[in-house]
Structure formats: C-alpha cells, structure tokens
Amino acid sequence: MYFKYVLTNTTVLIDIGAYKGLFSKTANSFFSFEKTICFEPNKLLIDLIKKNNSNVNLIIENIALSDKDGTSTFHLHQDPSMNSIVESNVEVLKSEFPWDNPELLDKNLVPTKTLDSYMKNSDIKNHSFFIKIDTQGNELNVLKHSVQTLKLTKVLLIEFMFLNPYKNDFSFFDLISFLNKHDFICKGALTIFKRPSKKISGVDFLFVKK
Image 1: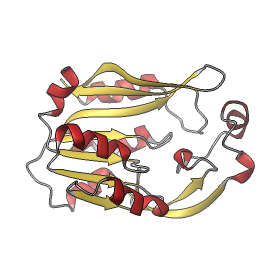
Image 2: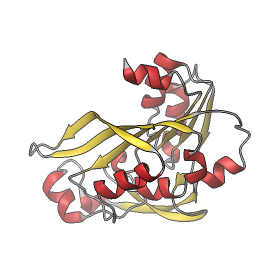
Image 3: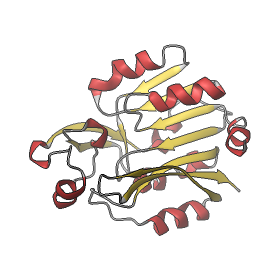
C-alpha cells in the first residue's frame, strides 16, 4: 500500500537500464504514468521495448546514462541482462554466474549522457519523477550526475549487487550516504536475487524523498 501511495504522486517514469522494457510495462499497468522514458544502450532490444510497451506514452533513448556526455565501452555478455559499461570481474563471473561465460565477452562503443544533461535539453517540465536504475554496477555514477533531476524525483528503485561481478568502486554505504545527502531515505528491499550458490547477489531497494 505504501509503494502504491508514493507512486501515485509521480507523473513520469524514467527507466534507466530498461533491458526488455518489462519493468516499464508492469509499472504502467498499475500506475499509468503520463510519460515513460526508457534508456537502453543495447540497440537489439529497442524493438522489444516498443512491443512490450505498445500502450504506453513512450520515449526510448538508445544511449547509456553515466558520468559524462560522449561515448563509452559497452561490455557485451553471453547473458545480455549482464551487459554493462563497467568492466567485469572474470573470477566472480566464473565462480558465481555459471550461465555467463566470460570467454564469450565482447564489447562495442555506445553513446553516453548524464541524466542532468539529457533532462536539461528535454521538454519535460513541471513533472515529478519515479526513477528505476539497473545499470549493472554503474548506478552511483548515474546518480552523481543527476543531482538536478533528483530535486524533481519522489521515488527511486535502485539495484545494488552485494555479490558483485563488476569492477565498480562504490559500496552500499556510499550509495546510502549519497542519497541521504540528497534527502532520500531507504524504505527497504523489494526484490532479492540469489545465485545458484545461495549467496545474495542483486537487491532492489526503494528510496523515497524525505
């Protein structure tokens, strides 16, 4: 009920790391956002995002959100849900992600923007945002360059990987501290994922504006 209450006060869904667009589809089936923006750097998924959100007022941006405007190396995995602009830790992949063979890793270049840069040049005004971020190890970099957008944001849903196959440089404490500084409080975990070893890996945390 609380989740439903806070989301009824938001008008635009920003889905960062949209993958196949299923999160946007599900969220809109419950809350009918006025507009949904999906950011997904994997161009092979764009048509699928459109198909899964055919009844949604949708904008799809085939770019990666990060800490700069420009380009970045996009690391392509056997399991495309693991694709990231953050380089992988091969040993963790081998030991804990058996269906994602590190020997099959590939890479290409993708365009990048900061969220603040994107929003500055958009026509979205006088809205309140719900932001979901699942960027496979790049979440805090996205947030650090979204400070102006966070001022208009009421709800955040962010994945953090405790069993981390990526070479990122931030901890869960760093994430909590940054969001607390920008007036968000953690309301707990909504989804918990485990590896075949039973170790907890990714957890989706809900944050709301104080």
